[in-house]
Image 1 (tube, helix red, strand yellow):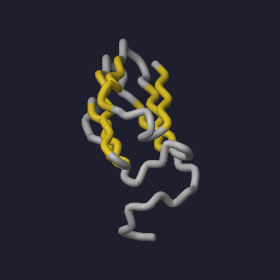
Image 2 (cartoon, helix red, strand yellow):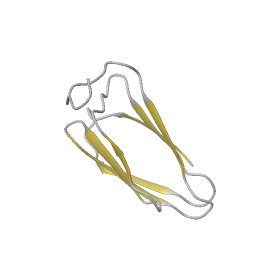
Image 3 (cartoon, helix red, strand yellow):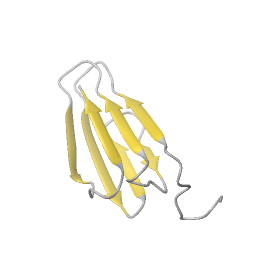
Image 4 (cartoon, helix red, strand yellow):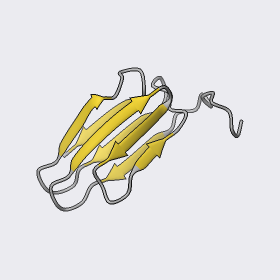
Length: 82
């Protein structure tokens, strides 16, 4: 339902590709909102559901890092490849 804070109960996957350089990604979450920074554009996922949704980060080339210390375990599924 548009505008509703409830999950849609569907499996959603957000895939983000890093740059060719050394990326320093940071993922933070609060409630059902997840924010990813460290790229030229920030990424925000609203109404995330940890049981069904995934944020997949492909670091690409370079020596990439991921700080997920601000992401509660119950926010969203997380995959990181470098």
